[in-house]
Length: 244
Image (cartoon, rainbow, N blue to C red; front, side):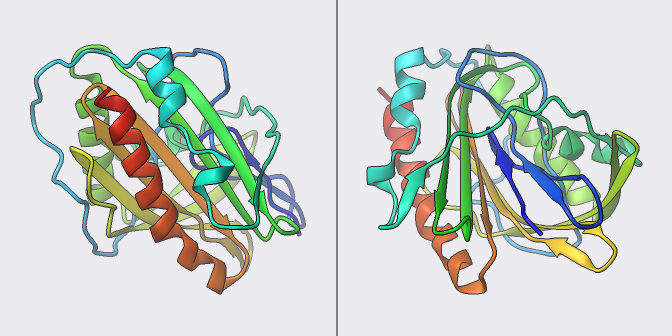
């Protein structure tokens, strides 16, 4: 069975019991609308509790968003760039409170202007990585992180439906990288077919009006150890670019 990540930060579509697609929204062009993320009963920590209110910040420029995105030189040896396919799938959660997380599986980020989107692969698709950088007007970025945090706290398990197919999801908050004003990280469990699960890890971090989301999907357990290091590198690069 083969998985595939399309542009952006996190997602999966079951194509059949034997094949599936992992989608993580976004594109290289400026866009608006779409995204969120799944949640589950587990514990763990975010680097900073999302604030209830945050002062409006100046949106990031295209140059800042481009500078914030990961490059091959930022990653451990063996990674290479990958041309990702676009996805237009829409995901509907069976619980209204979980819809923000279901939206994360789509290609866009609601209310945001999308900047750089990058995708990487290592080996024979043993691990895949997808990152999307975006900016919001006003307090949109802080509101976005708060919405995700609330959904994560309230959705232990739920089901999403897309194109007539259903996927069971669960997620556990895990320790997020330090350095950004706010960050959330989580491990997902997606049952794409009976007895078949994939378990990507994701991080969403905010600095001012900017935000990035990153998804790491690894077939081998050992490869998953890369996530913490890559998430930290991505956060540091994003924060530096966002601060100008």
